[in-house]
Each structure stands twice: as structure tokens, then as C-alpha cells.
Length: 105
Image 1: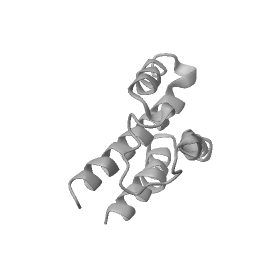
Image 2 (image 1 turned 30 degrees about the horizontal axis):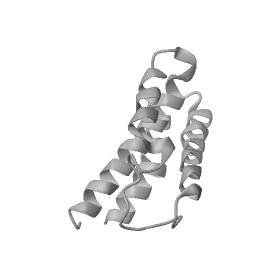
Image 3 (image 1 turned 30 degrees about the vertical axis):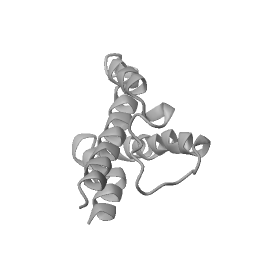
Image 4 (image 1 turned 60 degrees about the horizontal axis):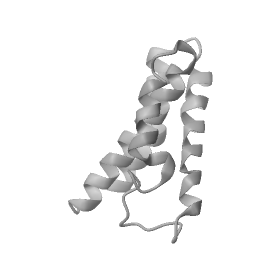
């Protein structure tokens, strides 16, 4: 259930958001949400690169509280709002994954 939830929130839920809230530009908005996965490139500098029991939040630089603060600031300018929302949804998804891992779902 945890894996399904994680990937649904990364790929399925953004599709629903794009489709229902951005009907005319849903493909463009969904692409932005999908490209927000590039924030996971910071996993490549971790050792080991993948640890199923590690929480990404505040471990990787682009998942740090400082970065999340910047993502919140990016909500203000209209030009960066969708990118910021996509990044914040990504962080929220990873936070849910951390919660589920730590509570042995």
C-alpha cells in the first residue's frame, strides 16, 4: 500500500490536479509536475544512493527544510506558482512516505 500511495501521489494525483484545475493547459501542467521529479537527483549524492528506510525530508539538499522554504516563497510570483506547487506536492508525498516508513505501514 505504501508503494502504491507514493507513486500515485507522484504521478496520478498530479494528473488529476492538471486535468480538473487546468483543463486547457493540462498537458503542460502535468509535464511540469512530472519534471518536478528532477528534484530527486539529489539522491545521487547520498551514500548509499537508495536506502528504503531513509527519510528523504531534510536528508537530501533539495528535500531540506531550507529548500522547502524556498519552494513556499516561489508560490508568490505567478510565473513560478505551478512549479512551486509541484515541488511542495513532491515534498508532501515524500513526507507521507517517511511517516508510513517510520510507522511501519
